[in-house]
Length: 337
Image (cartoon, rainbow, N blue to C red):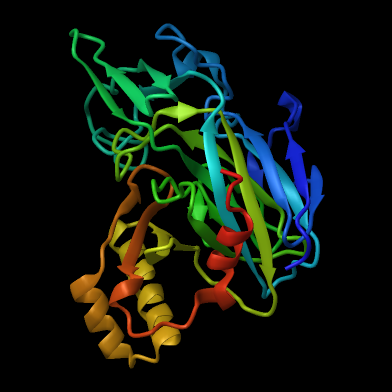
């Protein structure tokens, strides 16, 4: 890994991107660099109160903007880009959530058509207390309030797809994208397979918090100041997104139906466990079956997201994943969060 350089980037509104692929880079990074980037919320900052219904103040397809893409020097197809999330800080003292007509897990949609009225569109405003580390839920029809833990995450992060494709930022797939998992928080390292020259990394869609599954389709949406570190791992391909923390390794599957996303994630994790530990395939399968977890990212995007996770402590003397990239990036950025 080369000497760290810190790059700070704040996009102008007309620089926000709405696709992975099909965009010119906004800046260049090198392996080992630190990036501090402002990311806008999924509404582009246009929803600021209960009267700001997204269908009225936002315009398709200009939802879920990302900052970038960032061209990563020396990243080529067949490599892996390691992205260590150093810190994710709310950029404002409020966040927004909503329900939409024909969107979310508990309503009819354009692909699950039913003869029923569309879901009411409604906006919730969440106050964010960064010092207390809390996010306040306020019911809209009663006086009930409750403080929830502030657990910032990045909902959308990815690289350009291969095959000259441009994919909407609302879609999760092999390139990353709108993964919407609370596991994408500070301290985690995301591994993405590089599919084009320069990788073309982009990110956005911060959440102050989100429940597993993102049932209504919207987290507590926030703008963020996110700091991350990158490393190019040469000659090591990664088919599906993977995550590593100090305690666990996780594989991410994106597909519809939900069981296919589950299968993708677990197929990848079983293979990863075997490669790291030397366990035979069925032994690895058995261990993951009994000790693994399957947190759901989202069940409302064009593809659903499921993770397969297992604690490192349960694995037999595993080889460090990706030549120890997580530990290296964690150590090199200690004190920056």
